[in-house]
Length: 314
Image (tube, rainbow, N blue to C red):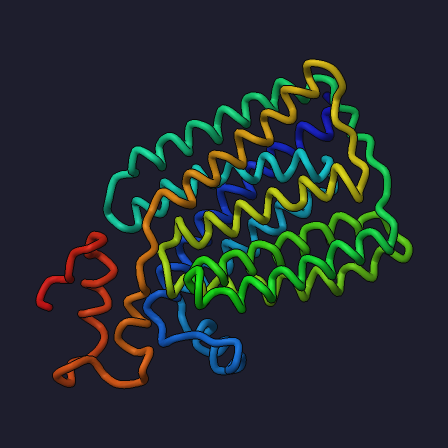
């Protein structure tokens, strides 16, 4: 394996750790805020940027993204995304620690499957050359247009599948579009136009993810988003971007590694039942909690209470 690719993959792992730590920080901050909404973008952004805790998470996300961009410049998109997908194991750890609980059996299995996928990926890299062709404007543009449409449908379907799930799906799709746009922009020339779609995908995707955080746990929201953010670029890389897959046994191992990493992500994303945000529970109607009490203590209690149990003092 080329040394440049190896360095890129190490940086991708560092990026994954930083990003998933940041996701948990953002979740903990956003879940205690008044409801965020795309219908009131200025108010929602103001709420986010007025929170020191959320800004701490944002700083981590920006740092993780910077590392991700460096990794993309050194290694093929599909390999970088596979390493990034393994970061969901980090997400499970930080999420459980934030909630003061142990990881569940399903989460532990998900972590194990993800790590197994990473080991298989490392084996398959023995024959990697890093060769890749360039996607055409029409192919990349069509991919992004379809992605935006599916993201919109996910938001519209959120009333049926759950707002946390629907918005997390939309966020993951748009963040994946940003990743694909960045990789395409690195090809130079007319490809630089995709920096605009990258900025749009990342900004809207980030806001949607914060909304999802208010309606479900970090592992569910960020797990679903991470799954899509990693699976879709891998699919794009081996189709519209023309990245090669090794032939023979190593090719089979590479495919199985992708399946294992993504399968582990699915297990982790489904490992924690969806729970309503404490912030939404006390402020969604715009009225104060019963009895005129402030929202502070009930919010903290609701966040710490196990699923299915009422917070102390209720």
